[in-house]
Amino acid sequence: VQLQASGGGLVQTGGSLRLSCAASGLIFSSYNMGWYRQAPGKQRELVAEITNGGSTNYADSVKGRFTISRDNAKNMVYLQMNSLKPEDTAVYYCAADPSLGRVTAQTTGVMGPRYWGQGTQVTVSS
Image: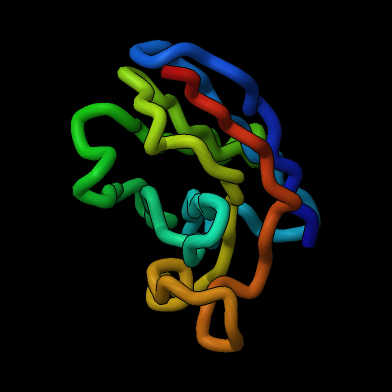
């Protein structure tokens, strides 16, 4: 299984970015997907998840600003980020697991998602 995240960059406060994650080596439609982020000196946190059935959930800090979506035909998951703030600055990772519980486990350990992308840097300048 491979997850390839892309789309990060430098943006001003209030700007937008769209992250993409290309998945291969798995039956994508069966997998639950998540976007995590990790800021310097902080733990990795779940930003948004989308189930294999298309249901979504978001961290309170991004509700109303971020939208997660998936395209099963293309094996892709996206994170549209609007109204970006300096506190959104982090490395963003996509994650995948057949178990929703593992996608939402808020851990990179053995109870967390089995598959991770390599991360893409998002920097929001004030």
